[in-house]
Image (cartoon, rainbow, N blue to C red; front, side):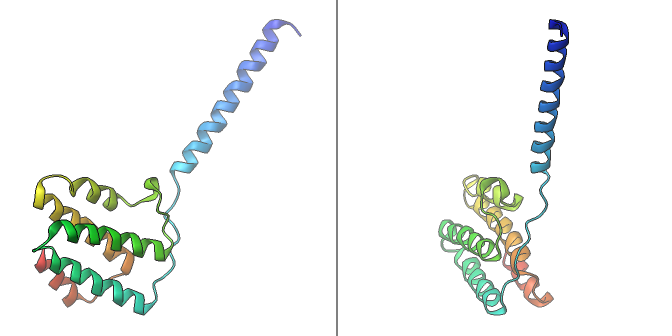
Length: 138
C-alpha cells in the first residue's frame, strides 16, 4: 500500500468514528420521559396537604414558601423515581429556579406557579373544585 491509500483509509476510519460518536450523543439527548412509579394514596394526600400549607404561607413569607415548594417538588420527584440530575429536571423546575431570584415577590410568585404545575404533574389531578380553589389563591 502506498501512502495515499493509507491516508485515505485513515480519513475514512476517522469519519466513521466521528459519525458514530455523533449518533451516540444524539440518542442521549432524545431520551424519553423517565418511567415514574405511582404514588401511594396516602403519600399523594400528604403531598397535596403539604402543598396547600406552602401556598398559604406565601403571603406572609414568600421566600420561605418558595424554598419549601422546591424541596417538596424534589421530594415527590425522588419518591416517584424521577432522575434528579440537572439535565434531567423538568423545564418547570429550571424556569422556577431562574424566576425565584428575579423581580422580587413577583418572581417568587411566578416560580411558585411553575412549582405548582410540576406538583400537579407529579401528584396527579385533583377534582375540579379543589383545582379551582387553588387557582383562586394565585
